[in-house]
Image (cartoon, rainbow, N blue to C red):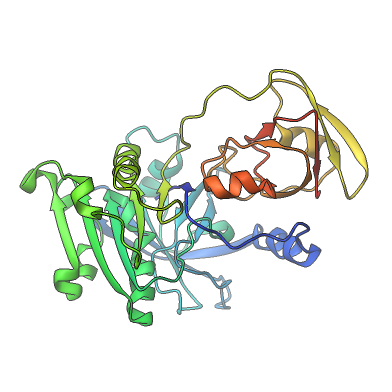
Length: 342
């Protein structure tokens, strides 16, 4: 699946991320991997397994993480890792053929074969599993992919959990066979069998011992969030990851604003119609980027001063209020001046 996330607590970021961490990300963006398996996972879904070309370890990852997959034609897409996080030599992703594909999923389905080499970025995680005695997982279609490693983690930690897996029909729902051993912990809700599902009934009333993780189409996630609000779930206890950027209103201001690059001392003026990312990159700042939709988290930068106009689909309301970081590919400024740690 491709992504984006919102809500829920994330680890507090340092105001000044270390140069070491940024260098590691830069190196990871240039990784290569070889395709070792392409398997049908459901109607319109393939599971791709990747390995280091020389058999070395791949970078570690945690449940909820995703990678950037760069195809031979330069197309880049983000996909959740859905394999075994303890297998250091293999990544697995699930790819749904998107009828509106701009080349990513269609190219993977039609041309990617065992032995092909691709480039990788990441892994990165904007959909982290936080500790909890109990979890409710809600998956819509290919949205099951980031939840599979979460289920394994919950099992490993002895946490109680339940997965509600929604789809059009069982034939379109990937990895069902892997869920069979979990028995009654998994409820399969194929629409052609049971009709539309009551999302409020699935997540139930707020519980102090439970966190909710949901991934799937926008309509599903909007329904989960609406149900959570109606049942007064505490902020941050219901976390969703989206396939595409959430709708955003008009920017907070239509006037230009200044961005100070703290590491060089340079100041750039960002005009309406220009992204902060483009402006700071043009000024020489080395800021990685990928989706340019505020969904993947690659371009995250620390905010040292000023008030960002957060327009991403990643940060929780609490993180937006904290104003310690922003995603300059889409976010702008509420204040006349922003100071960024770049």
